[in-house]
View 1: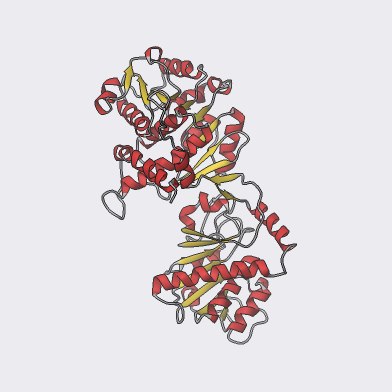
View 2: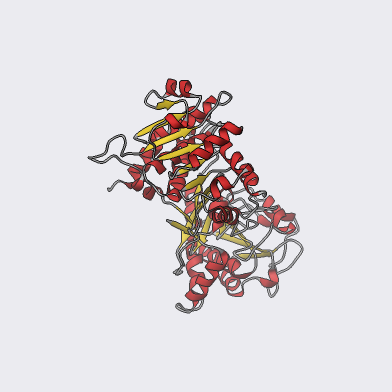
Amino acid sequence: MRGYFTADEVRAAEAELFTRVPEGMPMRRAAFGLADVVARELRQRTGGVAGRSVTLLVGSGDNGGDVLWAGSMLRRRGVAVRAILLSPERAHAAGLAALRRAGGRILAVPGESVQGGSSGEQSEGSGPAGAIGAPDLVVDGIVGLSGRGPLRPRAAEIVAAVRVPIIAADLPSGVDPDTGAVTGPAVRADVTVTFGAYKPVHALAAPYCGRIELVPIGLRLPEPNLAALEPDSVGARLPVPGAADDKYTQGVTGVCAGSATYPGAAVLCTGAAVAATSGMVRYAGTGAEQVLAHFPEVIAAPDISSTGRVQAWVFGPGAGTDDAARDRLARILATDLPVVVDADGLTLLAADPSLVTDRAAPTVLTPHAGEFARLTGDEPGPDRVASVRKLAESWEVTVLLKGRATLVATPGGPVLVNEAGGSWAATAGSGDVLSGIIGALLAAGREPVWAAAAAARVHALAANLAAHAATDAGTPISASPLLAHVRAAIGTLRELAAPM
């Protein structure tokens, strides 16, 4: 798993590191890694390094020091470097001296001057665009792990004037490092170079981070409280039929979904369970005719009592919220089988949480933000990780909170995050597909938290494959082509896990 570590966890690890290595070494390691990434970006984007130009946006503290030291290293490689100091009086002294020695140009934010600088190291009067100059790249070192809240007005004005790619040092300034929350002006980076560890912001606010590059600096980190399943590890645990398996031993998934009003939900949810390699899928509900028209291999029954033996249930997509639907949900939750509750099922649980809070068997809830608010009485808020963990622990269930960064929490364990890499799956019916995939993995015997997180990875990859099936640039999709690519996504993940 890839771990993500909070600002406090990273600072504690840094403090321990400083007891083991010479003073200044961690900053030099970080700066060298940052300079290397900037040089590679220059080479890729412009065809060279020497003779190119980079502007540094430098705040106070160690983050600013990392950027100033990196600037001195780039200067020695023939890059023209100018540094704009947003807090001149608090600029990192050693980093500033290193850049001066290397011949970098140092400017203060417009309206201020550099303390202790030579003549010419003053603000330029042509406004933010003039201060930035005409660089090939800009490096964001305005704030680091201690930063909270949006960019201050002067910094926001300068960032708004940037017209070239931005490389962020450690995290994009203006984005909360622990929650990924953005409450005002913030940097949108093309690349983020993180030092020592991935932070929650890198998964929770990926659109602001761009590509993530990790520079190891020797940190000893604890077990993570937020983590992501690696694609190859997902592929290694996806069900594969063994020599002695048959249709019953590979997992029999029960689906109770759809209604006269929403028959498509039954088709999408059941079809996803089929595509996610269930040995058998049994359907219970009024949508049997539509389900069988699309998937004749499904065993359909009019109600739960005549469905037959299953190993996991999925309830909710398009199932309705009337008394009859509540009775069906109550019957399913009264079993000792794993159950996925989605969509209308969540609305029913919001009205009567005791249906699930008194349950001993595994339960997975899959709300989007609005459904989460109905279940808890509150929106997830800026700290989505804390919110999803609280619901999971208070109800003693596994909770999958949907979003571009989907979060999966279970009592007593780390929260798992799946950053989808895009929003291609943000389409009607997409959640019905996701719940069917989770149900298939539960029926195959996978534990709930892994089944939910792995299903989110399969789902996101299927959406990406569907969106790019027609053009390299991608095109918006509906749930039907998403469903058609579930099997391909599973195959791709299995290939990643295959020995070379």
